[in-house]
Image (tube, rainbow, N blue to C red; front, side, top):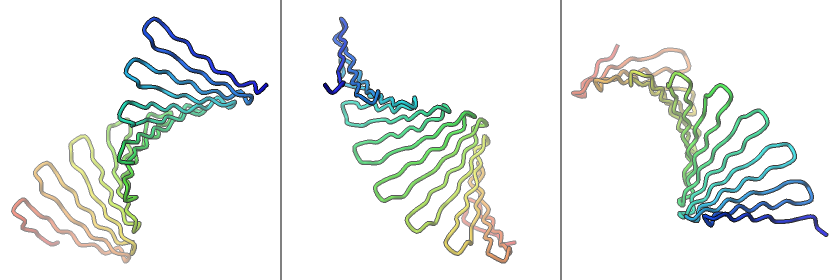
Length: 184
């Protein structure tokens, strides 16, 4: 015998639960409700498990939880885009959205509701945007020459540019809503 078995429990609402257990003591749970949505949970001997929720649009969510109570969420839709979210014990988390062009966006949010965005394309250039509770944000673009540009934008839509090169020299330019700018 293979020591594999399948359990199916059906209640009065016609919902049912499937559990498949193999000889390695790993098992898979699948819960299916009346909307044809279902949830999969795979648990191995290390008490780590993976959850996958699939709805009628063929979108699904993965959640992997290990013994340190950290977990990773991955949401994948029909366009093959997906979002990753890693949450640690400090309630900080990181989001990464990846599209079909292999570009991705990172967003780190801490307990103060401040977050940082980083967009990285295939040329290894990236853009950073930090947004605080006042809705002001700072952009920093870094290219392959290690030069970067900073742009701070406040609620009046005015912004300041600062370009810094490898010699630590920089140029400031303030641009207002009339598209005029000042160099200092």
